[in-house]
Image (tube, rainbow, N blue to C red; front, top):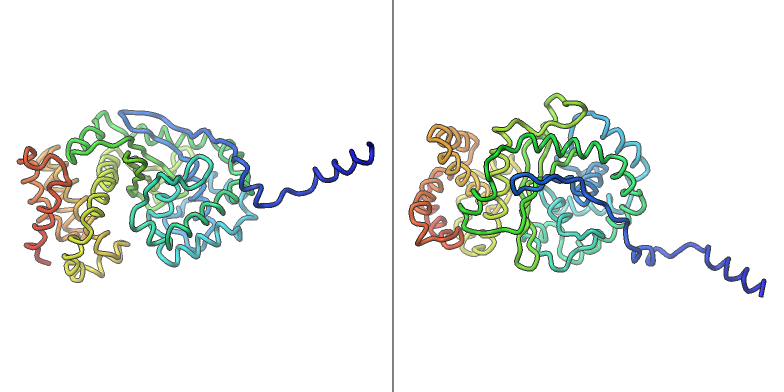
Length: 367
C-alpha cells in the first residue's frame, strides 16, 4: 500500500500539459468602474491586457510617450514577456491590417475568461484586418496564456488605486448633460449600454469608438487616449478638458451608430468610392485608408456638427469650420442633408431609414 501511495504522489506532481491549463478558468477580475449619467466609466481588464500586449510590441499604435510610474510598473512586471507568443501574434496580425481600433474592439468581444464570445458579432473591418475568425480564435487562446503566464490578475489588483484615479479623472469631465438620451434620440436607436474606457497606456489624445453586438443588443464604447503631451496631474494621465471631452464623447459614441448602419448599406456605399481619390493622401495621413472608414468619419463629423448647432449657432459654425479645415471636405454637404432628417423625423424615424438619402447627397459633393 505504501508503494502504491508513493506512485500516486509522484504522478500528481508531474507538470500539467499546456492544453489542460487552457481549460482551467482564469481568475476573475472585478473591473474598476463608476456609473454616472447612464454612462459607465471603466478600466476594462480585457482592454488593459490588450494594451499591454500592444505596449510590448514593436508594431504598436497609440502608445503613450509620457513617462509616469504606471508605465514603470508595466516595464518591471512584463520585462520577460516581450517575446511572448501573444506579442508575436499581435505583431503578425498588425502587419496585415489588425490596427487602429481593431485590437481593443476585439478585446471587448471576449468574455470574462478571455474566450471569444460566440454571441459577439464583430465589425467587418476587425474580421478582415485580423485574417478571419479562426485567426482571432487562436489569438484569444494566446491572450489567455499571456494572462495566466504573467499573473495579470495580480498586476491588475496591485494597480487598482491607479485605475480608480483614472476613472475619477474622467468622471470629473462628464457634465450633467444626458449624452445617452441625446444620441439615442438623434439616431432613433436604443442601445444596451454606453461605456467610456480610459486606457492609461494609450496616448496621443482623443479616442475611438467601438461597439459589440450580442444577441441583438448593442454595447457602445468610447475608448480614451490620454493627452500625453499634457502635464501629468498627480501621476495620472490627462484626458482633456470638459469641452474637449464633450466633443470626444459625441464623436466616438456616434461611431457605434454610424459604422453599423454603413455596414448594412455596404454595396451602396461602395458606389461612391470615387470620392476618396481626391482626398486619399490627406485621409491616409489621418489613418483613414479605406472609403468606408473615410465615409464613416465624414458622417460622424457631420452629426457632431449638427449636435453643436443644437448647443448654439456659434458652436455649430465653429465645429463645421474645424472639420472643413481638417480636410473633411464632404462634411458640409452631409451636414446640410442631415437638416432634412431632423425636420422630417415622422418620415425618417431612425438613422437607418434616412441613410440612403444621406448617400444620395454625396452625388452632389464636389472635391
